[in-house]
Length: 306
Image 1 (cartoon, helix red, strand yellow):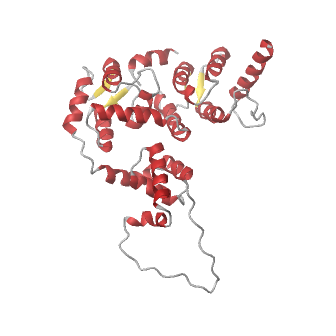
Image 2 (image 1 turned 30 degrees about the horizontal axis):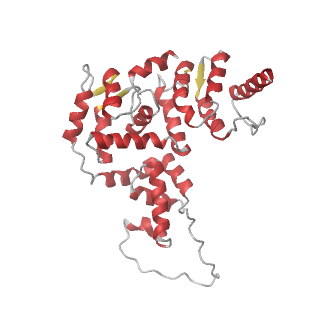
Image 3 (image 1 turned 180 degrees about the vertical axis):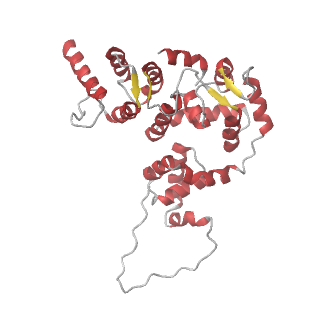
């Protein structure tokens, strides 16, 4: 997220076929062992048609931006259940890091080209960081993205930025070298892809969870300032919550000072499934008090308007 925007923020399948039934006396067929050290990950794919394999891998990669190797491994680990494989990948990225590294090691991103691009937008006070107006220029001039939209936040998520509103040189290099990218045109295409990832609810959920921890002022804190939350919500919630405007109006009128990790997380769970008329709201659900109060606030306003 860029500094010029931070000011406003701070102010404010195919299932694996079942094994053939056999009697207790029947012994399984023995299979000759070939060298399958790396190809064992694809064994369960052999029983699928080529078209089905490609479709699953393509859909997995479209959501996660992972490599073919990672896609096959995750699908194999989850019996080719696409949704489970994606959830497993996002929940256990450490399991797939070695595959990601091996697949990206063959990419030919030129570190000199990447450093030259970074140098152009580096902060005058710290040549190994992009921040402030330089970061704003990188997003607008180099990547051609709206600095006040969700894409800069999504890019910070993909860069694995440690600090809010700052990109470090090593974060920049690590990300683009892993992607095999070293030109502005390729960076622009990648930025569009990253922005589109947020349209998928599974990707958005992972991003949304990361974002709360990213903007916390201290690691041990479990809350963020309500004005920071409102600023972020106004940028990202329109993607998955039609009532985001009403929610923000409610929060502003409620006198809320801080937003807890629980409220932040549960709001997305509420938003992704709730109907615009709130008719499917479960009053007996274990929602945070603020969400219950929002539903009551909406009902009251609807009654007064009628």
